[in-house]
Length: 163
View 1 (cartoon, helix red, strand yellow):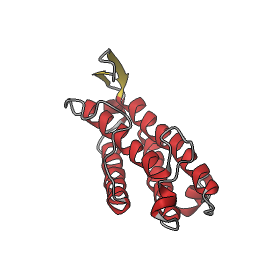
View 2 (cartoon, one colour):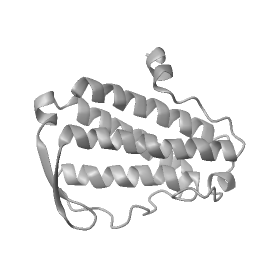
View 3 (cartoon, rainbow, N blue to C red):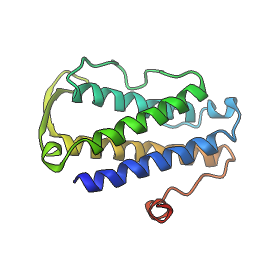
View 4 (tube, rainbow, N blue to C red):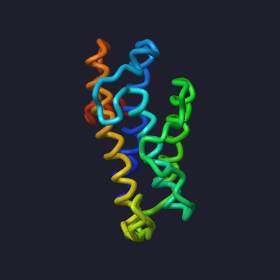
């Protein structure tokens, strides 16, 4: 599983950079324009991905849940949001890199947002984080198109060919 997760961590970093590069071509008003996405606009959707990851990382590290709401705004400034994304991508890549398959197969006990106790394998949690980011990047891709930007190609083979 580790090898697969290393590819996903690299793809995650690559795809995030492509989304942010294209988002910079838009005005601040456009990045905040209501595109009727789940988190309404491009900025809030990109911010949400980090919020969700930080909740999972706190669970992973046995820390208290840092947010009570998945729509908690973290970064009002787009440059700060991009810097946080870059740092978060580094954290996720480092997590994968520091765990072997045996460690990734271990279960993590945690409480969900409703306070219910649950357990999942650590590797599957990381798989979820990368899949969750892909899901919301797809929404961002659509918003970029709605806003008149050239939405970047995000297909995995293009990342793999860039290696």
